[in-house]
Length: 123
Image (tube, helix red, strand yellow):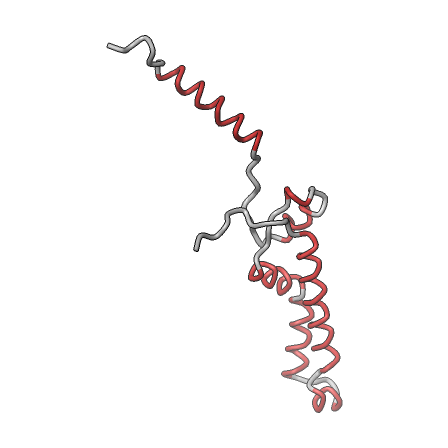
């Protein structure tokens, strides 16, 4: 036998959902941080407080993914240098191009990254 002051399970669920909706409206959930380039490009248009926060490791992964072609050209040149200058200089031009690409990609991700991480790490 239920008490009159105790809400039924349907009423409880409805009030609980209503409470969650108001909490969500007050504090919207940010999307999970991920190292996906397509999500990064979508974040560029979002307000700064609604963007994903990228950790240093994720920033490095994105930069490596964006600069994979430069790295491949540099590694290929290092293994089989096309000219004698490349052989002695270790494909310096391609190596510098790769590192410049990495720096540029890192800076771009940092500019697009949000203000703080989704979940603060507990110490």
